[in-house]
Image (cartoon, rainbow, N blue to C red; front, side, top):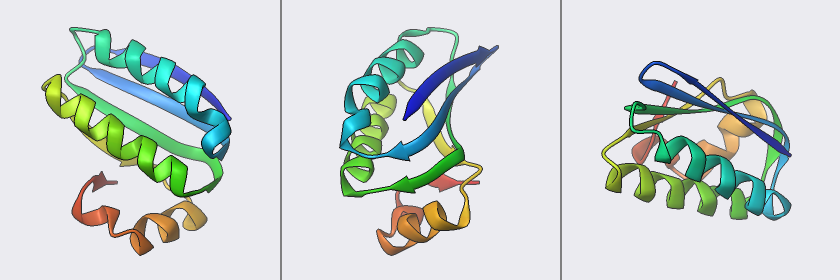
Length: 101
């Protein structure tokens, strides 16, 4: 998986691609730290447009990101979820925890 950070004004976008699993832990954490460190960013969007798979460790990483974003006073949303990703998020009841667009 690759994680690319794009910051546009008050919005930070974390573009993920490939399989989002434990092997992505280091890259995901570094990208999250970068986007959360930006004082200008008020909303963080995690973009799943190019993610074709995620596992339970990815769900854990998303929960940690949510905690860190809340502690930093930033809103968080999961966007552009493909059907396979959306199904995993629904099974995990992430719709009750995250804003999914």
